[in-house]
Image 1: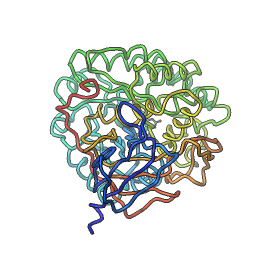
Image 2: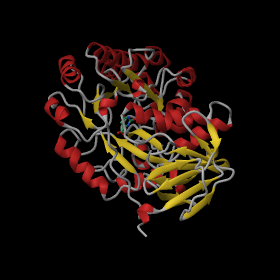
Image 3: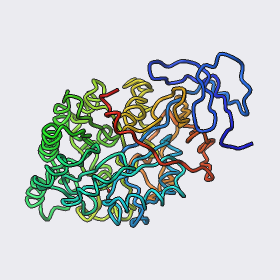
Image 4: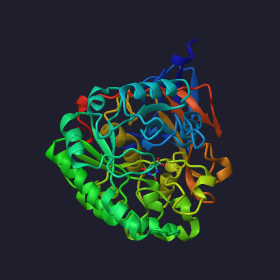
Length: 446
Ligand code: DOR
């Protein structure tokens, strides 16, 4: 029998469907969800009794840095995609600040080719904007969209000049997204704090104003050019106030580190929690949560940005910005479900359905007949401690080391193939390239 056509019945799980959580049987056939609550008794190849567990759509993480090609001492596609499988992430969309940068169609296709042989989960790659690559941005097709570093971060990608930004928003049609921290503000602040070795100054250099100015600027560009735009890693409460209704053009996301860490954590974790945009205050944590709960922010993604521990442990500001998270993001949110902060359906919306809609990903994000069988079984009663030594990410550490969470992914399927079970990744499984139908019109089109 061809393994790709195996019929699997998942029985007795509480299934997180688009509109309800219900105990229904789910049938996987080959790479797709073939049926939900089948009417008749079925002949299947395999039955999984998932009593006591919840079945969710696989997580789609739309903001990761997996460092291949060029920076593979920090991370690579193999380690990172294994970490995804363990974390319940079945599709990732990766950023262009690799080496070389993904700023041409050729480079994009090279990365896709590289991923096809290695990735245990499904994959996609953004094309990065430069001040003068509009022709490449126009020609790119196999991509969720365009990534613009309006403020500089890790790497050398930056488009800060107004004329170049106007050109990108005016002359391209792919949805766009951006790292929003105002370069002028950051540079002026950096001069003020020149010579500092206190990592807490990172939040004074990359301050509230820097984030707010750049996000405002990007929203203004998107609105004037009627261009779909997604705000990455919102770090301030004030930015969430900008993200109300914009005629179906604008969406935004939060990262776990901006929900769970704040400037009070520098004392305990130092440069481990140095990232861009920087940590802000406990009040910002609270306002970002509120924005997720009331729908001004639609999505959660990690900005998984691995650096080696020895790189991170250099004194500030030699220490690089970014932290790994893809392996623990779902568990961090399931733990919040257990604490009553949000519902499982909200988590499925923020981490599965919303990213599929924002990036027009075909066949993903929901448990529905005909959708891809990218699925994750979670045990809301399982308690486990995050430990550096258990991390599958190549960098081998987590800022949540030592933290006990209740609610963990226990089994993951990618395109109908079981890729993670009983704590082990099946290294024979390969994911597929995500596909996009940008004529769908994004999140607000439904
Ligand atoms: O802290 C960050 N690190 N923020 C980014 O935007 C980039 C990332 C990286 O690639 O290291």
